[in-house]
Length: 108
Image: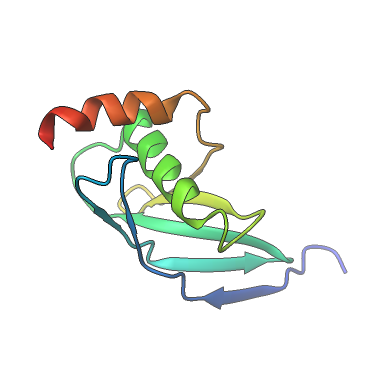
């Protein structure tokens, strides 16, 4: 059987992420869903020429995890840097949510 993989595509949902106060919402729309040997990956595509930083990857995966964990339990959340052909799959940092809220609050 070697390197054979079972691969299937799915269309992930689009949701709106809101901080606890609910003062605003951010569209969360991962473009691709991919299932490889039964493991689901929810993927956001990054096309910008601006360098994709670890901080941005952490924020995107945290927001996707917050919104999609219930809909896609045991899924991995990833950002695909299209220009550099690199998939970044990380476990969202546990302490990022409070930092994200603090950074966004002044803009509400």
